[in-house]
Image (cartoon, rainbow, N blue to C red; front, side, top):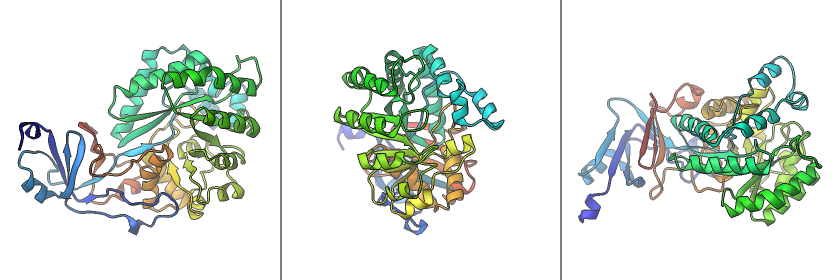
Length: 419
């Protein structure tokens, strides 16, 4: 062994009563629980933050004398890949607790927005917030996610809605990403709604984003993904199509908020070949069929359904026509303030009759695919990204609907303990 090799940091994790690497799961269609490969009494050898070996725990101890043991003591451990939250809005200022009180008293989301509440409340607060406040808020929410086992998080702008503050949000996301081992994926959502202080039409505002804001985002390398809210009160189908095509010509990957309150947007997302179509609570039968064998990922956001008291994404129907279904939190201060991925995914699974394998795929490999990442598995050669639960059966994680939390989350050389 060379001096360089002897200096490498090696840690052996285990033994795991159950280890699920999730390698080889299909990206599309139904998955039976029997398709999950559950390994027993295995260990994960991590060297300088990368997974070096996966194998029998005792054999790994014998084969690697100079190794730090990260061992369970008379308890059952289950190891799963780090979870992926592929749709969040966790950069914001202020609060929308008043919106929540109005909603539970009977006002609709669209009524609250039309009366001056909703997204514009958060826009005002986010514009007022300084960079330090926004970065601190992002990192606080990221740390909550890590302790829930989530290691990859998409983060949208969209509460600035002008040149200066959209750039500010994306720059804060970039700074936050340097201060956490979690992976943060920025998405430009300047096309959230047309702000009230913009004097032109919705299409004029989209032209402003295309001509002024998007080029600076690319020049500063702040994001290569963009999003648009296709909905009544936001942007219509025709202008959304025009904007999305223009953004893709500029080199952005496009995703879309669609079918949250009215159907039709998902057809556009599929026709354009967007990387994902998110929400889908009001997707009709024609829209569901549009996802058949499509590479556009259908992203269910049960947190918004719970926050707004509305129906869930038709996840079962989407899987049955061979869609790729991901599940994300939509964590935001208005319609989805909970931010707990396991709780939301478990409730969606119970409501839509998803197998545990389908739910698990939705927050790992299929969530990663919505971000066009090769992630969501525990694989040799990849960075160590896995989460450890103290249980003898991985199904308890969903059976307990979020009440069973990880004891550890591992990201590279960083270990987070859930106290």
